[in-house]
Image (tube, rainbow, N blue to C red; front, side, top):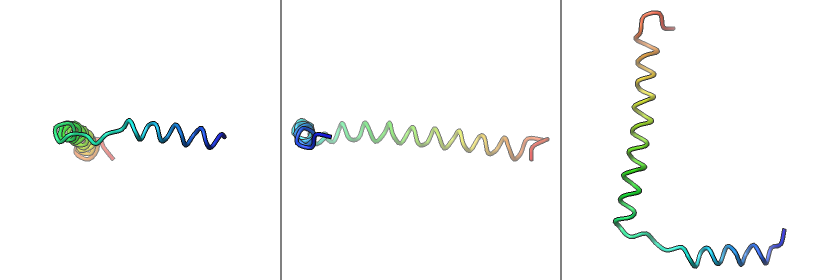
Length: 57
């Protein structure tokens, strides 16, 4: 592991990185929130199917 080389590459990435604008942040937050809601809905539907369909556990 070449530590000086690794540190320089990390420094280069940090220099290129920038704080997102409010619009970019809001778009990412909406997409992530929609994904979380979708996964939760799928899990809830599986729960309902497993507990309320005749012949279930």
